[in-house]
Image 1 (cartoon, one colour):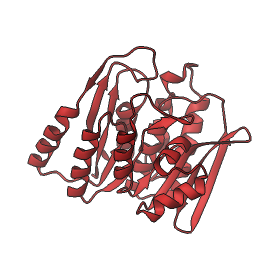
Image 2: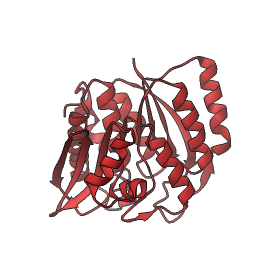
Image 3: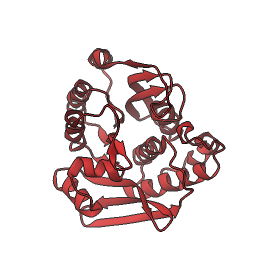
Image 4: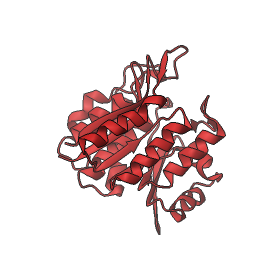
Length: 262
């Protein structure tokens, strides 16, 4: 079986991060090996939460993995709380010959997330430029490139070494879309928009893309699979609190054996 390292936070409530990534990667028939950057009682969108930062442990975790002599087919990164975490991951990535997908968690709705300094965002950008695939939302694309035009921003990342850019959360004419940009190619997929922006959908998107690619899908098919799956899950989510995330568990079976084709 292929192995994928998942480097993200672990939140007890609010379906996101590792709680999303582990089952999604696993259902594609890929081993999921998590490394938490932080452990939270609930994700940060809620009014109150408790957090244990694991910055001082990350290098120790990587050291133990190295002692096991393991290598990975894929590395998927998400939330970081400290520049030192990103530095540790950069060192780890350079030692592996793995397919790298970076979800550059930095902000949304036009602003940086609370606690994300300019220096942390710059470090995340450094990691993103090492990636095979980067999956920013519209705000994060701007934070990575300084460009509000999606095509121009994506081209900047492509010119700096990223192979594929997938921009999520594009709203237009009452629909929501995801765009894929590669050298001399771009396409946007739009689906109906419920009006509620649920937490954790970015984590779902990046995990489905990674699982699809590692199981043999093209990046193009991976985007379509992720978009259609998330749309179905959002449509059938019971909670009206966006912080709860979407009820993706009901539809995991649809990804089994799909090889990235929904």
